[in-house]
Amino acid sequence: MSFFLALIISCNSQDKRPVIGETEYQQELNASYKDASKSPLKKKDLKQFKGLDFFPIDSTFIVNAKLTKTENAPIFEMATTTDRKPLYKEYGILEFNIKGTNCTLTIYQSQAEAEDEKYKNYLFLPFTDDTSGEDSYGGGRYMDVFTTDEKPNGTIELNFNNTYNPYCAYNEKYSCPLTPRKNHLDIEIKAGVKVFKKH
Image (tube, rainbow, N blue to C red; front, top):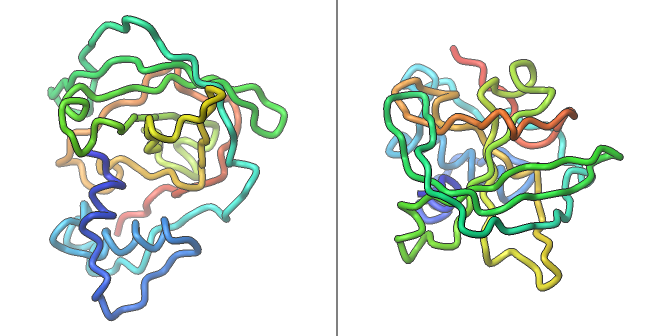
């Protein structure tokens, strides 16, 4: 299931503590992580959790990407941090420009989610960039994109401010898809969530 969809559905708006975050996305992400019933954080990290660290909001990391759909893409087993191998297929290729750099990413569709009426429009976009392993999580970050976001002209908006870490960045008990090597961006994406500093 889409992480962001899950947190929107289960976000507890009755939490009396103020929720940290510059945007609605950041506030919802932090609210989910503060909730012990669904947070990926370990108990000791949850006790001291005040909010995730984010890069400053930067509109230059909101881009329109040209989407070229992959016809008759084969279903394959996606490598993860464990022995689990969920089934995915390549949905298409995204081409865009960030700060003068031409970028290409492959976007995927989970076969399990494609069969679920609630999540059939969800697409999975994992990536690494030149901040990975330093300012951001070494295993890369994820972005949720939806087929319904595609515009009639064949483009789709990517907002790198709304990226998040896989649960494995917080707790090794989770099984997370590994970012394919071809989804590395030769640019620093200083937007979205930063690396988590464990206690």
